[in-house]
Every structure is written in C-alpha cells, then in structure tokens.
Image (cartoon, rainbow over all chains, first blue to last red; front, side, top):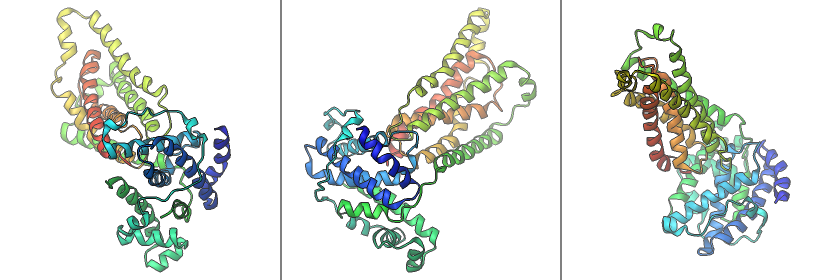
Length: 181
Length: 213
C-alpha cells in the first residue's frame, strides 16, 4: 500500500506540473488499481468493470485540480472511485441495491489488475455525439496528438478556444456517461 | 475505445494544472456573492441610520464576530468537503463553536435579566422579518458558492450543499448587520441562527441536484 503511494507520488506531481509521459504512466497504474478495486465490488455486474474504470479515469482527469499536494494520492483516488461506484450502483438498481458494505479502507488499493477487459460502452461513439466545438479540438489534440497551436490551425479556432473546447468537451463526455441508462 | 487509448487521449496535451485554480474560484465566488448580498441589503432593506451609534456598543462587535465566525468555520469545512478524500476532521466540531458560544451568552443574559424583560430580549422588534431577511441576503452568496463548488469534486453532496448554505448564511448575516437594529444575544441566538439555518436547508436540498459530477 505504502508502495503504490510512494511509487506514484513523484510521477503524479510531475504530471500535474505538465509532464505528459508521467501523467500517462500514472493513469495506467491508477487504471490497474481501479480495475482490481471495482472487480472485487462489481461481482453482480462484472461487465461494467471496464466502463467504470474509464469513467473514473475521466473523473480523475477532469477533477485533477482538486488534488491537494498535502494529501495522499491513494486517498484522493479512492474517494473518487467510491463516489463513482456508488453512483453506478444507484443508477443500476436504485438505492436499495447498496447493501454490500463499502469499506473506507484505502488499503483496498493495494492490488493492481493490468488485464483490461473490453469496455462495453464505446467512448469513441459517445465522443462523436459531442458538438463540433468540443469534438474537433479533442480529436486533434488528444487523439491525433497535435499541439494546441497545430489544432488551432487545423480547426480554424483560436488556441484558447481549442483549450476551452477540450476542457468543456471532457466535462460534457463525463455528463453523457452519467446520463446513460 | 480501449482503456489504453483513453489514457493516451487524456494524457496528450493535458498541460499543467494551475495551482491557484481552486483558491481563485473561491475568491471570485465570495467576492461576487458578498457584493450581491451588500446590494440586496443596501438597496432593498437600507442601511441602519443609527449604525454609528450601534457600533459604539460591544455587542455590535460580538454580533459581527459571531456571523463572521459562522462563515469562516463553514468555509474551512466546505473547502475540505469539496476535495475528494480529505476528511472533515475537527472542521465539523468547529462549526458548532460559534452557535454554542452565542447560546451560552444568551442563557447568561436571560438568567440575569428581569423576568419581564425576557420576551423583549428574545423577540426584539424585528423577529418576524429577521430570518427571512438574512436568507434573502444570503441567496447571492449561495448561488456564487454553489457555482464554485460545481467546479470541484464534492463526494458528499447533501453535507456539502448544507455547508455551502451555512457559509452563505454567515455572510448574509454579516452583511445584514448593516441594517439590523438588534444586538441582544437571545435574539441573535434564535433568529440569526434560524436565518442562517434556512440557507443551509436550501443548500442541502439543492446539493444532490446541482453538485453531481
């Protein structure tokens, strides 16, 4: 447990400072932790695990400014994971389904699971439903790997509009996921 | 989309996080909300003509400190609630301190007062309007604070909404002192507390609807 916290803390702080490679490797580690965590809890809906991992990763990304450098990263991610898990269970079955006790035990994050199953929900399809001003900047910068300046040239948008479009687009994506049945 | 692709998508061009983003959000919300509260009190209720004379009395300052400490302790708790995985700790007990202190003071004042005077100490001359006026003054703050929290990540929406309402109520009460003629502790302990409780209830009801993410 201390292992994960110590291993991820440095790269995570680097990621928040703008290091994209450190960010990608942190997200990969977190995805493995989340997968193990959800797989143990979603025994009733095993094929939801990968969807919930993806949803939680988007939440981690969208809310990463709420991480306080003074707090443990695992506690922060655990709280987000628990929130997303409770949200999913409520969406699936209403409040009464939440009878399995939710441990507050951050140590539950000790395990990792790198075997990604296929996600049931296709985020690419969901992304395609976003309005152009959100979708095109995300596709250019996030998927084609262009710089913000290049994306601005390609889409004919200003650089700040590209940045705002990505930011709002990922929020909108999180909203779309939440509203799905 | 596979999870590995999603991670690549999220990490590409993510850029650094602005370290001051959260505090700037609060600062903006509190500044705009307080301005709104001042606008409501000054334009709709009016500033008390005896404000200068009132401010010569110690209880005027006790009242200010009371409202300000309700707001300050609520803000500390709110800032913790808005970040995932940060425990409330002593912040929830701290929120009770201003109330308990005012109730203790009110009990002493009532115990020492002539029996005939007690109802006047409790009801003052504005008890009917005070709670709703405080609520009114707190609405702009509540709107602004809920906006700020929507950009953060509260995992306990009812508690977070209630605490946002408490913060709004504290600032609303603080601004309402520009208008309010009442300085007696029993009055403050009942009607001010009620006026700050109403926005808390509104916040608790709105929280689960507005603060999902």
